[in-house]
Amino acid sequence: MKRRDFLTMTSVAGVSLWLAGGASRACAAQGASRSGSSVAGSYDNLLILVELKGGNDGLNTVIPYADPLYLKLRKNIGIKREQVIQLDERTALHPALEPLMPLWQTKQLAIVQGVSYPQPNLSHFRSIEIWDTASDAGEYLREGWLTRAFGQKAVPHGFAADGVVIGSAEMGPLANGARAIALVNPAQFVQASKLVTPVSLHERNPELAHILEVENDILQAADRLRPRPGQYALKTAFPGGAFGASVKTAMQVLAASSTPQGKAMSGQGVAVIRLTLNGFDTHQNQPGQQAALLRQFAEGMAAMRAALTELGRWGSTLVMTYAEFGRRAQENQSNGTDHGTVAPHFVAGGRVRGGLYGVPPVLARLDGNGNLPVGVDFRALYAMVLDTWWGMDAQAVLKQRFEPLPLLRV
Image (tube, rainbow, N blue to C red; front, side, top):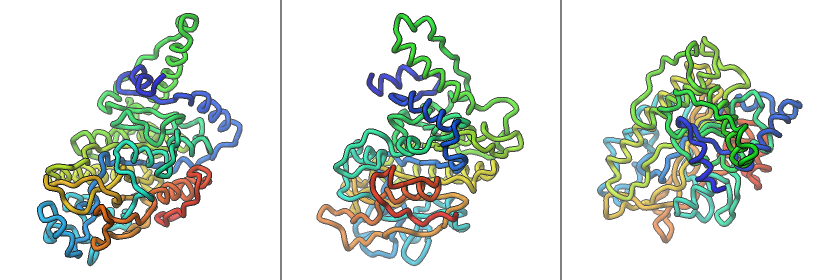
C-alpha cells in the first residue's frame, strides 16, 4: 500500500498516522521499555522542530549589513541598514524578527550560520529528503533520522507516541517506522474521534482490519493528547494565523501531559513535535511575503517560550529550525530569490548557549553559480540532539561521525 493511500484512509477528525511497517517495531519498542532496556527519562528532554518549508532566504533573515556587497547584490530587496536589528558590528536580524530579541538578550537563542551539506541539491523534493533522512547528497535512505533514533533507543511505553506532526501530512524525519501522529488540521484536533470496530472485517479483509486496529491505537494515543475539561488551561495568548494555531495545538498537546497545576508529568506526552510554516519559496515579490512569514515565526516562537515557561518545560525543551536549502545571494529579476545553498538556522531553549555560531557569509567568495560555500553540515545539529540532548550514540543513527555543535548547557 502506498504511503499517500495509507494516510488518506486513516484521516479521522484531523488526525492521521504513519506506522507502515512500524506496528511491530512499536510493539517491540514498548516491550523493550517494559523490560527495562529503554532510555528511561532521556526523552523527557523535548525536541520541537520548525520546518521553514520552501527554503528560507538566509541573507535577508540574518543580514550581513556591514558587507558593502550585500546591497549591491540586492538593490531592490535588501533590508536597509537603518531598518535592521543589529546583533553585532556586522550581523543583524530582519526587522520582522523583533519578537525574538528577548530570547537573544537572555542568551537563549543561538543562530548557526552557513548550514547545508556537501554538494547541495537544489530540488525541493530531493533536498528535504536529504534533511529528513540525514543522508549524503548521493545516498538514498528510507527511514527518517528520528525513526532511526527511536529504533536504536525506544521511547518509553508511557509516552502517548514518539512524536506529533502538526500542520502537515508529511512525516519527514519520523517517516517509515516511528509511532507518530499527524494533525493535519489542528482546529479539528479538539474534537473527539470515534473508534472503529474491525472485528467483523477479520475474516473478510484481514489487511483492512489490521489498518483499522492500528488506526484505533493511534486514535487512542491522540485522545490522550487532546484538550479536555479539568486539564491545565494555558494562560498564554497565541498569535493568529495558521502557524499560531499550530503552536497553540503543540502547547495543548504538552498541557495534556501536565498536572492541573501546569507541571510536566515525567515519562508522558511525546518526545518530538514538528511544526511546519509554509511559503518560503520566494521566487517573486519576496520582501512582503518573507516579512509576513518571519513575523509569524517570531511571534510563534515568543508564544511558545511563554507557554513552555508556564508549563515548566522551557528548560527541558529544544526548539530548532530547518529547511531544504537557502536562496541565492543575488536577487532575481522578479524581486525575489532563487534556490541557493546555505542558510542560517535558529536553536532556542532554556539550556541553549545563545550567540552566533557557524560560518558567517562572505559575499566576495561566491562560487561559480553565485552561491555561498557550505560552512556547517546540518548533521552536526542532529548530532547535538542525539548525543548531547538525548544521550545516545549519534554516530550509529547518522551512520557517520559528526561533531555535535556546542550549543547546549548540560
